[in-house]
Length: 590
Image 1 (cartoon, rainbow, N blue to C red):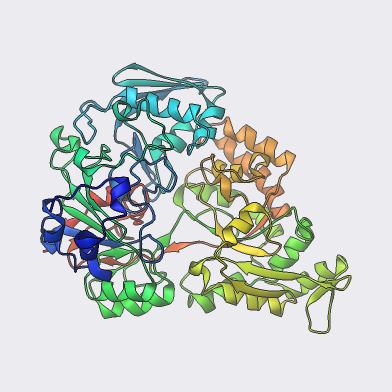
Image 2 (image 1 turned 135 degrees about the horizontal axis):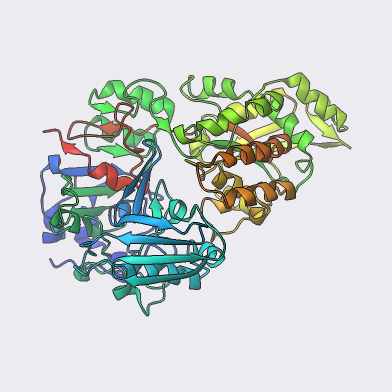
C-alpha cells in the first residue's frame, strides 16, 4: 500500500501499518505491510532502542517542528538536528560542526560565527548564516517559544552579513552565549530551522510533518521513514552533506528503530534476548540482575558498580521555601541532618551510587570549583547525618515530639509527604523511613500531578528533582537560584523552570550578576563562586542528595563503539542532543 503520513493522518493509521508496528514487542514489525519506505534491513544494520511514550504509545507522533507544543528530541529526533557546535562534558571538548569557528568582541558585546561551507538541509537546500539569523530572530520575536525569553533578554540583533557569517550583538556583555545556546550538550542548545520552509509559518502551529515532502528535514544524516504511535523508523540519508564534503564519514547505522518504553522488567527481557540494543537507564537492582543474563550487555562502567556514569542532573531534596516552616533555614537544616544520604544509597542502590554536597555534577571541568569551597562545606556539611543536631534545631524552633514520636507545634504535626517519579521508587521510601526515625512524619508517593503541584507551589511537603544546568562552569546552576527564577517560568534555558524552591537572596543575585559578565575559566569566577556558595550553603534552599547515574544497558551483540569509561567521548544517553556523536562512533559487530 502507499504510505503517506501527515500529522492529521498518522493517528488514524489503525489497519495494517499500526498493527504491524511491533505488535507489542520489538522485532515483530512486518516491513512489507508498511511499503517500500520501511523495507527490510539486516538486524546487524539496525539500531533498536526503547525509550519514551506513555502507556505504550508515543505522545509526540507527527510533531516535526522542534518548537511546537509536545515536540521532543529525545525519541530519535536528535539524529535530525545538528548544531553549530557540540560540547562533550566528559571529554571537555568543544567540537565545531555546522560552524568552523567564532570570535567575540573584546568586551563580549558581540559574537561572530563562521558557517561551514557545503552544509545542507535534508531537502538539498544550502544551510547558511541566513538560517541561523532567521532562527534566533524568530525566537527573539516569539516569547512563547523555547529560549524566546532568553533571546529577548540577551540579544539586541542577529544579522547574516553573508552566507557564511552571522553576527550576534548583545544587549550587554555575554561571554557565555555561544556555550549556552550555540552548542548542543545534554538537552540544551538552540535547534536551527530552515528559513526557506519556516518563513511565514506560525512557529507554534506549523507541525512540519509530511513524509512525502521529506518533512521534517534537518541537516543531520537521518530521515524519518515511519512514525506511528508505537514505532518510529529513521533511515540513513546517503546524500548527507557531511559525507559529500568529506567532513565526516556516513554513520554505519542504516536504520534506527524506536519503540515506547513500558517498564524495566519488559525492557530487561528484550535486552537479554538481543531484541534491543539500548534503552532508558535502568534501576540499579534491575541492571545488576540483567548483566549476567547476557554477557554481551555492558554499561558505561562495563559490569561493575556503579553500572553507569554521572549524569548532568544531580538530585536534591526540594521544599518550597516560601511556605512555613520551610521558609526558615534552621528547619531546612534540621531536615537535612535527619537524612542519611550514604545510608540511603547503601540500602536502595546496594552502594552503587554517590552522594553529593553540592548541586553540581561531579565533572572534570567543575572540580576546581568544588575544591574552592571545601572550607565552607566543612562548616555547612549538608550530608552529615546527625539526629541529635536535627532535634536540637527543631526544639529551638518550638517543636516537640507528640505521643507518636513525631514533631509537632501548636498541636499540628509537621508532615513531610515526599513526591517523585518511578525512578525514585527505590530510594524514596528509604528516605521517608529515615525521616520518620528522625521524628518527621513522612511517606513516599507518586501522584500523577505531583510535578504540577511542585511547580505551582501548592505542595507543602518535599520532592526529589535534579538540576540540569552547569557542566563546565558554575554560573548556570547559580542562575537557577537567582531571584529572576524564584518564580518558575517556561521560556528560560538551563532549567529555569526547575527552580521550584522559590528561594531568593539579593546578595546572591549581585554575585552571580558579576559572574555572568566574566568569561568561563577566568580565575575571578572561583572567588565569586566561593562567595555565592557561602550564602547558598548557609541558607540551603534545597538539600543536595545524590549524583544521578545513567545506568544505560548497551548491547554489543550487533554494535560496538559505545561510550564507556575506557572511551568517554561523550555521555551515552541517546535521548540527549549529543546522540549523533554516538551514531558516528558505532560500528557493526558482525
